[in-house]
Length: 226
Ligand code: CTP
Ligand code: MG
Image (cartoon, rainbow, N blue to C red; front, side, top):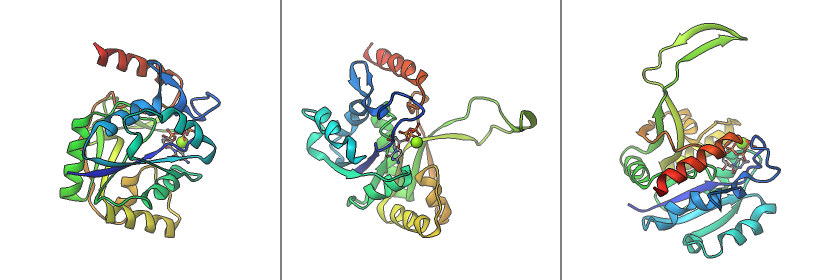
């Protein structure tokens, strides 16, 4: 089933502290953004990659992407102040019936998860990648524990998140009208009362957020090459 993917890449990577967009940092000698784009470049069902960038980063992205197999199907869109605004800008350039949103900073997503998300979004309207929470979770007031939360039924949410286009569009429009800022797209869909399905993903589908994540990234890539 065909789809298009919106890749928000318009952040500034403050928590990574590299002094530039973290998607330009090299892991296994290639910029993070290229690792993220690989799977979509090679997937014949991915009809368009909408890459959302800051205007000041556009030319550097274009330089990096020269010769990448995904080059031909990438469309550049400018981002906004918050990730949600960046995704909404990307969504205005989308046209396929199934739309994925996948963070530029999450380079290890596997094809089989993408295929399952696309199918579930087609069948159910919205589907998100997630892994079961494996740590013990407690609620605290300041530093004092209030309670231990029952872990069953708790999921750690990742991207990709997949939607039928009209659902994601309505969810974003309503969020904009109400001034609601969610931490992911699914929360906007939940707000309009529509179901969101979970597709179990992999623990190594990490988002590169802080400097130590770069060590994990090197290790994941080294393992995959074996
Ligand atoms: N993103 C975006 N537009 C924004 C903010 C973030 O497109 N206004 C993108 C980032 O480029 C990243 C993804 O959303 O690929 C997830 O965001 P995050 O991990 O928070 O990245 P940054 O915002 O760059 O990092 P930080 O919050 O540490 O500054
Ligand atoms: Mg951010």
